Length: 135
Ligand code: THU
Image 1 (cartoon, protein in one colour):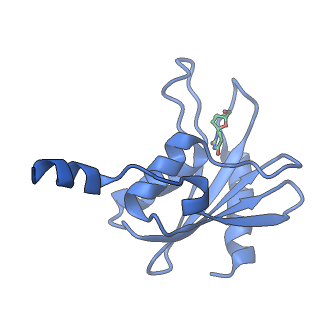
Image 2: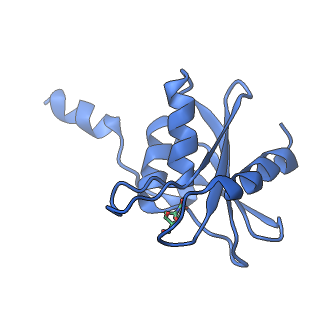
Image 3: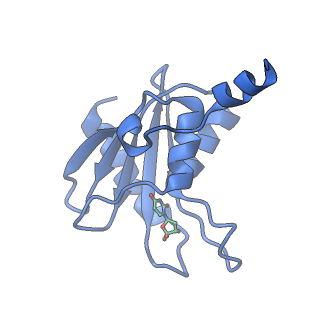
């Protein structure tokens, strides 16, 4: 899918966001290695901590359908600045595809593309666990 198409899908998901507490909608569209695209929005909860970000909604939908490798994810917010993914979402991206790209989309549809490795330097992954097992 084109970059514009992926960003458009992320922006379209803003209207699906369930955000009665923050009133801060976020939309996401993740492109899998095979080209399949899954979308997501943030889903809040009166308990606050059960809230799921848009990025994780999209990624968990993809993983639950058998996809584990991602090329890129577009993240749209209704802000003038580029809204960056939270630390938890960066960690979830890192679990599956440390080399993926993250495209931030602002309310005007302008984009800024970053490498996940820039957003999450020295990310924790399974290699640390495996290394400690072999001692
Ligand atoms: N949120 C996302 O969905 N993604 C981000 O990248 C940043 C934060 C959501 C969580 C919560 O529903 C709202 O934005 C305010 O934190």
